[in-house]
Image 1 (spheres, helix red, strand yellow):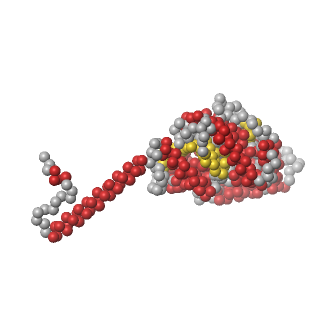
Image 2 (cartoon, rainbow, N blue to C red; image 1 turned 90 degrees about the vertical axis):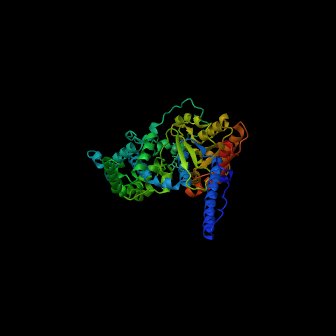
Image 3 (cartoon, rainbow, N blue to C red; image 1 turned 180 degrees about the vertical axis):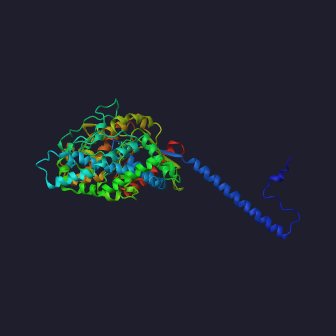
Length: 490
Ligand SMILES: Nc1nc2c(ncn2[C@@H]2O[C@H](COP(=O)(O)OP(=O)(O)OP(=O)(O)O)[C@@H](O)[C@H]2O)c(=O)[nH]1
Ligand SMILES: [Mg+2]
């Protein structure tokens, strides 16, 4: 049996101890105490850490192209910049595909065919510039194949159908009917007028591709290919990638000439197509993006467009040890009307909903139903979310997004009141329009929420890294507080 004295620490000094032994013993005791304290501190920190939620769960909602995936990228960049940077290379083919689709869209829309097409019947009206354009189309012909190769590789997609003369292939992939979903839009605004059609995304370059399993697998593939194992790329894939990049480098000058052509600009204007306002627009940066050594910058990645298909779960592991949670789980949803049925399955698991309303879309129509105004769809969607009883205890954050495009539109003379008649004769200024829309969304929250609910509102431009970082800092506390309360820690 152990004597009770054996549990006393430090043990009593030996009866006969030399000075030298005493010093050594005291040193050893001090060291043991230091180690013991360090262990106590570590255990206390761990207990404290366990008190924190391991996870804050956020659901991103909003119509297609509202900016949900772009906000997710901002979160990744903000909280896990190293992981984000490690994936930068994966975005290069996406950006190349976005670019190539713009080029092929222009060639298809303006019906620019290369000279051999006119071998027997050259149009009498052909100007010298038209001749130059046709030569450009000859040198840019390989981009058709590049588009198919990139799309197939990234999304596992089948090749796009031949371009009709006045619409982008992706616009055909949307069904025109809705599933039996409460989030299906109704036509509340009288917006399908001429101006709305000028901005119809279905009628311009929706330079998108489908994500989902193919995309996720692609990212994994890229990750392993950027590791120390270069064998992750098969030699056929390597050759294909090399070939694509060579073609792009060789075509860069001609792409720039096509985009700079006055005839192309006239043709786009005449058809009401404003490519600069479309998603995945890289034509202004063609030289940089086509360079051999090109690595996408964070700004490029925010502007790259991938159409989300199906719910995607992204776990962001905090890279800073100062963060109060270990990770955030962000559920990124597809926003097109057929995708919305999948949203409800996440309603009882999440702490916070971030709803994206693209306020610039007041004069646009849904790609999947051209009789529905996009702003009307956003408002209706917001009302449906606000009134949902399952969400009464979920924190709401509203992002009035794409404020940069809204501002450009209003400043270019587009009259908001022509699309939203209740705006009446208020000054046609961005500030007024933003306030009007912000109030409209707030009123819906007040009117339709089953219980009084405070919500956070932010006017955002999700492609502006710095500004979005400020917004993320603002909402971070609210999200954490909600996660702590929901997990009964507060
Ligand atoms: N100019 C501008 N572009 C934006 C803004 N927010 C997002 N975008 C761009 O809009 C496009 C669509 O954004 P996404 O984040 O892919 O939209 P989404 O809501 O995820 O769309 P789905 O996945 O189809 O539901 C991307 O090319 C973004 O770069 C913004 O505030 N201003
Ligand atoms: Mg998305």
